[in-house]
Image 1: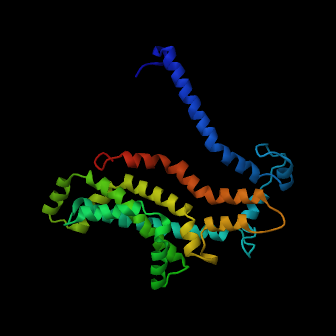
Image 2: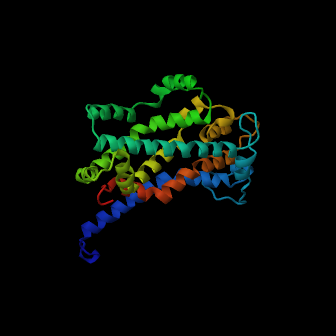
Image 3: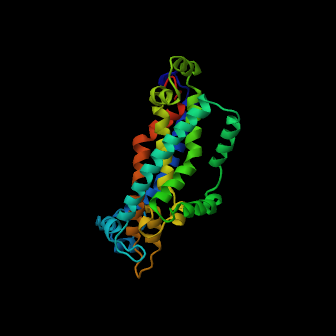
Amino acid sequence: MPSVAARTPGETAARVAIYAVLGLFVLYYLAPFFVMLLTSIKPLDEIRTGTLISLPHDVTFEPWRKAWGYATIGVTNEGIKGFFWNSIRMVIPAVLLSTFLGAANGYVLAKWKFKGSDAFFAMLLLGCFIPFQVVLLPMARTLGLLGLSESMWGLVLVHTVYGLAFTTLFFRNFYVGVPTELVNAARIDGAGFLRIFWKIMLPVSKPIFMVSIIWQTTQIWNDFLFGVCFSTGATQPVTVALNNLVNTSSSIKEYNVDMAGAIIAALPTLFVYFVAGKYFVRGLTAGAVKG
């Protein structure tokens, strides 16, 4: 690579221009979060008389406490904490089930092909492009038949089924890179379907497991449509509760509480992004052999 001293004036100007454009994009995307954060720690009187981007004169965390513990949502004054834990209870099993089933599907479609497996995989991929709205009616009918309507496990089932297309795609493409000779050698040594899966395929799957877990966690936690359609009352996830918090009618519109609630609802996905975001890129670019 050329050293800094070897750069021509034109190259230096181009680099400065690139960083300037990147800096503008960073400001563009961070500005809404900055405004939300400032608003959430301002007293309500200061919000009414000040500007959106002005720094708070009196910092208060009371809006955060109210949003979490005793804000009015619908007809209750319990804040979003119960709905936050609902999302936790929904996301963990849905992510684990969809990821593990996707790994098994990908293993079969990559290393144990059957007649019509390629056509089956092509049809399965359609699930990645089907809009949420299309599956609402068949999902509602299925949940009713299974007795899971308006329950937490019904939501887990919906997210598991809808996420299978993505997780199968991730694992199938990853397992294609695993040398087939390795699988054949294990079969010659007497290893069967499950033993090869547990002893050979899963140990090399850590990068793609990270990709699938990060993807599914983000998608399921941020979902609103399935949550509002297939849950009610105490089983609703935090995204639905946040919508109800903002739309609950009262004599005073508490923007600071709304912003605090929105940030609380976004904290898990922000945590996943900042802590594990780099593993998502590494997992997508890692091959099965070198990973």
